[in-house]
Image (cartoon, rainbow, N blue to C red; front, side):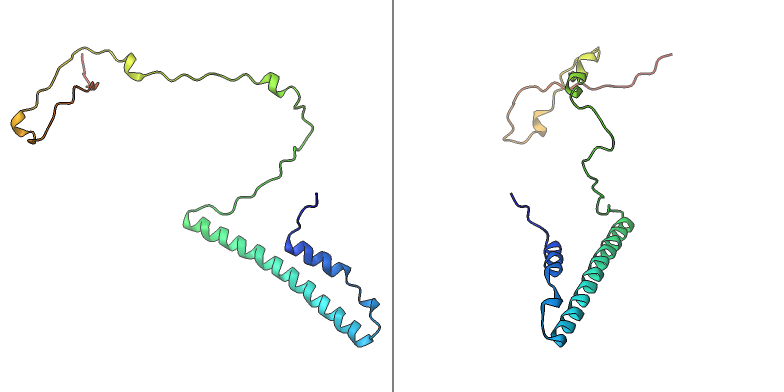
Length: 140
């Protein structure tokens, strides 16, 4: 499988294949050499300007309080590491989340009545909803 190259790399590879010495006409050879040099200088300048533009964008975003473009590092390990026994060393820990209401001590239960005269005319009773309310009590 052939990997697709970026347009900059394709242009650079194409420019490397052009050989001005193959042309018989001296003026054409000189003109081609000058054009290739100009193209190469422009390519370098475009690359530098893109890098500077990205740095300025990052700085502008940083000053706005945003984050700049992240520097993504390669996935290559820095040193030798033995990955063969990594699965054997890893033991997953089970996490269980329990209800906090189970640990609360309920010392009083009350059902609150709401006056039916203050309810809207189309109100319907849909049952009770259990709610735990915690009050702060200070004792000496």
